[in-house]
Length: 365
Image 1 (tube, rainbow, N blue to C red):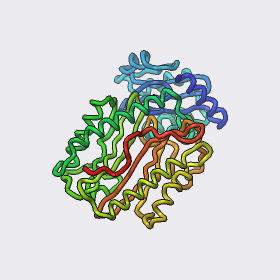
Image 2: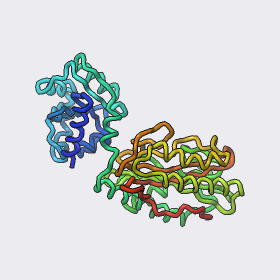
Image 3: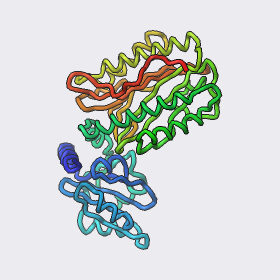
Image 4: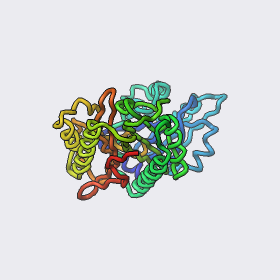
């Protein structure tokens, strides 16, 4: 599978006049090679040319790389005693990129690696590879979709288990920690950050972190969680009522639900990313709450929790089968409470499939 991905990468490089692509440990390195590594003070950098793949790598990582890479890699190892200059010296014997066009993954390549690359490739034109790599990863294959579906099932079953423990007096932090544990119990292999558990006025902050606030009667409660299975993300948000909530909060819930439905209905091949955003946003704006929906309607989903395509005004990218993204409109009333309803969808040949089955109607706890 990774060999086919390298072939597609090289085809894009040829189309765009790129001689090499530079990638550090990241989702992109995993996508292209199958190697799961992390950034550290020990420089690791892959260079993909149109006919080869090279990896500068600490010597202590070489045995793992040799057994886990899914593609042929020429390794340029370096020891702690030599430090990374030995890796660059080894690479220079095999490859020259002086004066070439190099695309580097700006979202993950640090100044540390970039300056070393600039010193190695004299007079090279270095540009951002983010759009190229995003285009490569946007369309998911069957194996990727299977992993994402399993991640979604983990989120749904763990959320349902958590709801049996939600009650007045529980704190947001208690519930966030418990949900993480339940995700692992139900099959998650990764949870890079704690989920969002936001209650009462805190639920009016779209990207809040969980606090010591205790749940109270009349609160809206947002549960927003994500996890990976085989490296691929699922992402879910549901909003619940703790006892009886005000008519205004019920009203914004109903509007958000309609916006979610409209956004999912607008997702289909041939539509643009902004069409989905417009469909969801229109419901909320027409009802007079446009200023309280202050984020994009959705984001791409896959090896990263946020990737291409963005579902936002101005994105004229045409949706095609296999693209995966979230639809998550929200309304947030400062000091009162907020609502967000998030689903993961994949574009199909004749529409879109929602990966979530969890109910969206307001549930009172």
